[in-house]
Image (cartoon, rainbow, N blue to C red; front, side, top):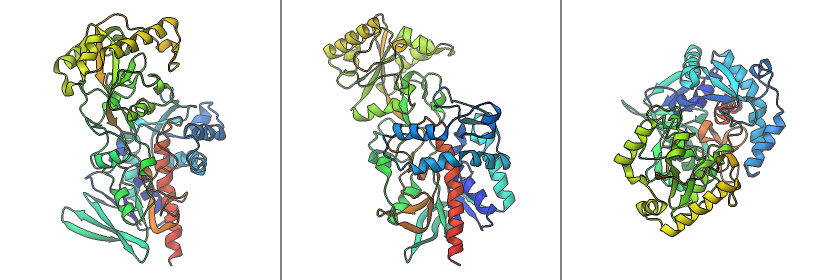
Length: 468
């Protein structure tokens, strides 16, 4: 058994493979394990012992039905049934291996039910990775780090391993079954643009190693291409505000739940017209970027009082704002005393923006948004300056999907027939999502990573046995 990638799913696959007594090699292009998974905060589970002890009960069918609805019934729902039905057993398996989970809740109010199980320390790098690596080592899995998969060995219609590059030269790794778990396409601008995203001014929160290696290798042997239907964990940030490092999404001003994500602000397109309910993150954090995918550029408008409200409790927030306007990285943030001057600063037609803000303020005064029906408590009029306009640029947390598979996590061709010997797990494999990650089940991506890693290994064991 060969596993390409040692993140959440790769480690799950490796441990499961060794428990099944399969000779197992795990390679990773990084010099360490975890990949993009180290920053994962928790995992979805339903009807686990932790929930039962906390008095939390929920019907699995309610969750599955909601996921189908939010996904516009575009995915094969059997993938959701499998994931949800396996979730409790997967968590108990992780706990038996030493993985540390602390509490269970609704992840900042974003989950339909309290189904989010937090890793110790709030990150998989603390609560998951070290324990899974230790178990894999104890069971005898062989790790080859700083080893990059180059291409698949494809012989007589079957996958029989990969060619790889190491610091000491190229090698050939023969394997009866290969699992691709390379973490998706999140750091490959060409592939992101194929999905329809703009990568101009993009900030990457993902690991630089997530360049779509698994996807590209799978396509080279005729795998079903799901890239254009796969979602990205794409959110907003403002270039002028501090944004260094991979943990931008947690920033109290510029993060995925902060100022750029919306709320009592106004989002306008290149013409100065509103485009969406700015509080759409209430339903799904990933919705904050979806409407922007349809515009040439989108700006966020707020005034000083709204900024103060959104950054309450953030140390030196006003000073950070002042410095951001003064330095104005990327020409992305402007301050003005009137909406006309605000429009001039970014080249929007003055009359259009003035009318947009006049209409919006009237909605705030009446408590009824006649355009997008935004929540009343989010309708705060902007009648006093100073005013600000900020360009919303893309911040990609995780790259998702692209490789078609069946429920056994066997990679499939365009005709849905399996490609023998090739399996896929984790963010390379997300057949349950279409276009947007439905975060109703907070932690469902991590749950999928563990589930797909485990079951890819189980199904690969059956395939290997059939070759004897």
